Image (cartoon, each protein chain N blue to C red):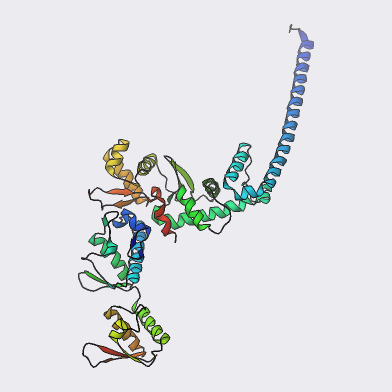
Length: 179
Length: 250
């Protein structure tokens, strides 16, 4: 089976018609379903948060069978994810898409779990620490999109589980957990 | 015989006819009795055979197929009833019902991909995957037998032959001759273009397009506009190489 790096591609990736938008409704629904799952799985495994439609994206073309998705097809598949709350368009013209392989709520839960398991209750960390610090290395938080992280933290703030405050340096914020 | 006149003549002719009839009936009766006896012997022998080779029949698909063939030749259907002596003897009734249910499962799971038409070979290998834990091996012959049992459900399970291949149909779509011919052409590469169909079958482009569009609407074909030459290809998952549907089952 074909691989992209260490990612195992599904069999349909080698079947040419899956790269053409299918005109028949039922067939198209199945096609969209398969692509949605593939995009989420791939982004999760590679920790990808944004897809730019006009740039090369390894998932959207298969050199082995010489097929690529058209712009329209990419937009249809991503739109399907957007409708399910698993992705968001980052601009009006649908050129960039934010992929939420974990929803904001799931990220919030993930952070709480991380805090509990590592004994950071009542500690203070910076947002940058969470993204790239040694503490989160090896977890899904490592390399998380900053915007996604901040939104998850804001959600937790609303629930009173963290307090966000401006740090000493202007470009970073501190987080105090009170789980 | 010299014709004798009068009532006596008529009477003796009638008497002779009666005699002939009696003799005839006797002969027929003797034959029927003999036949019955032979059949009874045969049946008991067959049962004995089945009992003796029960394990082989259950475990070995080739042997099972041969046993079925033998039964079919003498007009015995071991699967006719789940309560019959055969089912009790062999338990193979249940085996085929179980197989039937699994076949329905697979057909449903792959339907959105192949439109309800699946290659028998592919069905078998998916079946083998599904039955990993079951001890008995399953052959194509077993699949065909189980499918023939599914017919009573009236859901349109049917095996059709396209060229050398056998396909299992699980949707009520009726395929006409044109469609079958296209599927046969498609077997070579897994896809066809309108041009290829025209050329291979000497059809007009209208006829080819019509038939292909129907197959598309039925979900049996998928279009592919991505080839360099810009010609639309119609792919048929039901004749595609085995690997395509495998991860659709997961």
